[in-house]
Length: 118
Image 1: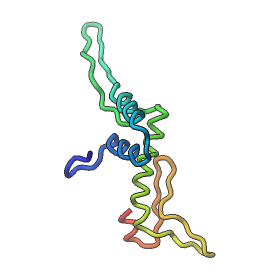
Image 2: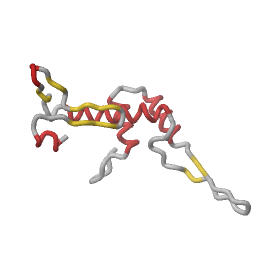
Image 3: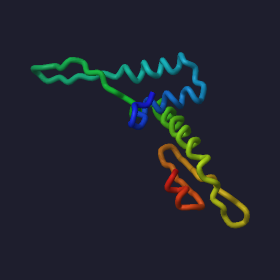
Image 4: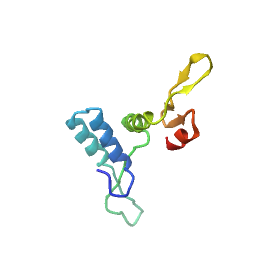
């Protein structure tokens, strides 16, 4: 899982999210195989390199990558959600401490230290 003293890599976070949301193992393996199958090589008129395995964590333009990113972000948001209470508005209304839209996350807290922690 996480390397000692290091942050989770994106693919490790995605695997954690897939387990947390009970995605079947066969789908997890299929996704690992898909993202592990990106290769490239370079060619000129005189020379062609060997195939190189690319470490792809999020594939640009790939629909499933966007979904997986959102699922992984949801895990992060759920973990931070309990650390701060809702932001109280006038008229007895309140807002949750975290609002997100795809890759944009906004923290709204009543106290500065809660905002910094999130």
